[in-house]
Length: 176
Image 1 (spheres, rainbow, N blue to C red):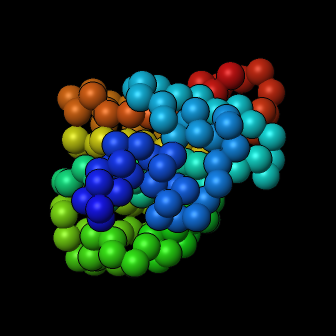
Image 2: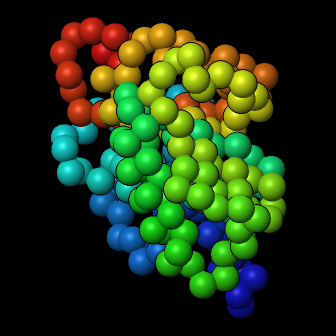
């Protein structure tokens, strides 16, 4: 029976959120967790649960897809590390998760070869990653366009996914 449950969670991040993490998604969060596209923009009010939803998607990807690289970016390292903290809080709730290979305040490397890395908000210091499976851009309305332009090529060869999450911040920039 455990195998059937694991398979359901691997195939459905909403089931993973409910059964493994005890997270009861709202209907809109459930749609996001089941989203299968390449690009997603979440324009939500503050405290709506967009960061928690993105953190669950990042963790699900790392656990169930071996050798995947997931990047968390935002306007500042403090902000991207807060998103990473959400990922880690969910990870620590799991009883039988993929064990960590290495762990720090800004990165989690799993024994299955997947990595989740929290990056600073400076275009010049985040280059060098390739084969990225998922990029989550938090506070995207406040991320400088040059940072956005620096991360987009990281998805070109891999065909990875990009999630932009933010509250609105005016009629400017790539998020608008």
